[in-house]
Image (cartoon, rainbow, N blue to C red):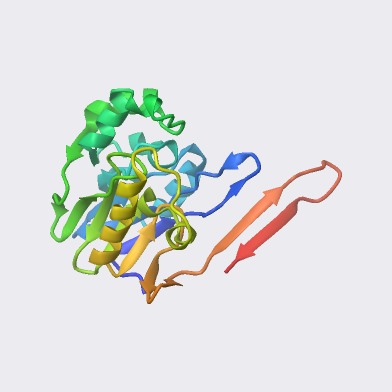
Length: 242
């Protein structure tokens, strides 16, 4: 069961197509204090209207978000940062340097929106491993996918939001996903997350528990894909459920 203080606004999707990566990441809302809310990851432009609708459904406007934690600076996780004008935005120092130093280019990382991050860099505060943003709510450095990937550990409920340190459960059980920093570090980070938390919220999947090597999801999966392939035919809807 997902704790009341945590709300998955948009659930990550573990999928891609022949055209490429969907980029639909998990966006989560955490109530950190009375009347104070933290957003973990922001999604990309395609998520914007749905994200705003979900916040409105919760009775919140973007100005009511006091903290935004960005797991890493890939387009699918950070492209709505600027919506939260009154929030403190956090990323790790290693991640910000990875972008601003152009290290990402040397690593062949195609997912960094350099101009966008540079434009907002003066608003991004850097945080360190173990730093508390609110009582029993601390950031955890989880390098591997990128050098400065961050997670957020909710100590009182034993939940960790991991971004793409664990993209989805399939990669956790079968083979690690793409790493622009270090595969060895990615494996250590995944192990670290599983050791300190009981519930894992991945970057592109549903929250789950890992018990005796088996994944137990805490939410059902629902997704509709709608295609208008021919103007004289009805739209084709593909429903995915689990």
